[in-house]
Length: 112
Length: 114
Image 1 (spheres, rainbow over the protein chains, first blue to last red):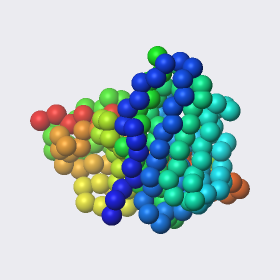
Image 2: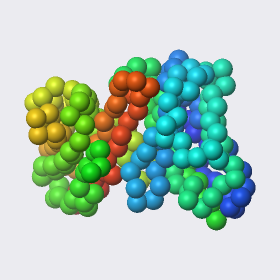
Image 3: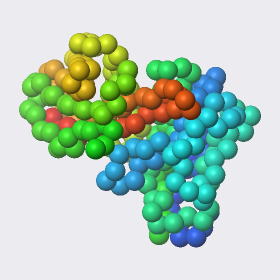
């Protein structure tokens, strides 16, 4: 079974540019989550999809972040325009139920 | 007070010793708890979950839960250098719109030295 795939693995962009992160969950997992770890801080929840619907987006920092999940399959997280404080590691996780979370290896975003 | 707190360490133990990792949580209504292991630059990997008071054992790992005192711990017996990683305590939230949202502690860095 393929795991959760994220790409790119690394991205370095300039402040003000746009970046799009992609997550391919495990096939059949209805639940898809985005998390972020800023250096020195704990991993924090950003949002949760159930199939193609946003279940909970309470962790999204501001309206520069836009997440979508096309047809209940892969998801994208766009940051536009990027700011320095957006730097960190963005993780995606998928789950079929309450316990089966699987995380991707993350995208390390650096905004300079 | 943070919702989930861990001692960030680093915790250093000799090979073969028992490593003890602790986590406290603030929401008394929390029902289940996860322990993840994360190697540098890799994804968090689930190693244990526990939802009942007491101990749960899986190989060299034992999770202990005390809901009255609101703490959960992870013991690693016969520690190996390959256990060197960051250990993350995570609490899922259920109810309302928070279906499975995880709240993480900051993680404890464990180093097992030969």
